[in-house]
Length: 381
Image (cartoon, rainbow, N blue to C red; front, side, top):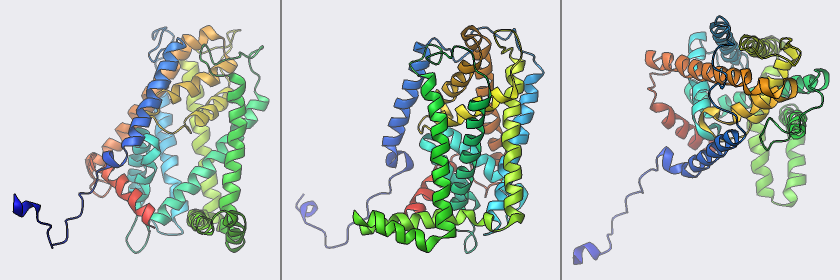
């Protein structure tokens, strides 16, 4: 006992490294709370996660057709990344698709969008493509996507006719339709500001850093320098704008990606029997609006699988264009099948490449560790 109580002269061993779940316990708990709240709100509003009207209204052939649109959409979503990376490194197409599809599954399954760092982690190359550079391309991609989608949504909200009078709430949920529409316009403002910010740091970096020190430096010079340095690193993802050979194809494939997304949603809505009060079929403009509102709701960080926020976004869009009884019946079938198809496709396509070892031979259980290492490296850079 006496020996045990004697202080050792040897250096103490470092504390064991905390695992991903220990380090992110707070986020995981918050994610569970958000998911529970979303599910409870939908159930309280009388909206089921399974179709209330059954599958009788479904045109069966539209289901595999919708999955086909997901496949094409996912291909363009993945391969357009090459134009952002080309300023740093050239990645073979097969590897680009493998890494991207695994990353998309990580984004879907991991809480608080921690999966966003999986793609940069998997694609980095020592001495050629750093994690910070790869991450900057993801930031650029997200900002361009957000701006593109919010412009499309704002245009649809202005031009596409809604039901009259417009309901006060999203079906029976305590969510104001008017505020949902305001959030759509707000998203345009947020992504416009984000794009302008990183564009200024890319095209006029010295001036942007001076302005940061002038404005934020009044509160904390150290904070001003830190924020400016971070913004400058992330702005490097806009390298593609310096070459029309990269910018043109990237913007073209981004347009194709989002248009196919909307076409798939339009097709599936028709296939599920979603109709207007007069029995007419859904329109492409309505699909664009629903896609945009889904984009607004999934900006809420938290639930793995986007459970609850996905359903809320689509129901919010349908409420503006279709009668309540249609939203509750055929609409519930539409939401159920769209969510199920997207989850199965995203996880299945990622699982295919994980099983084949296409992404540096990583196994499925390595994804969590990869995201953790990426977070640590990002913090250290």
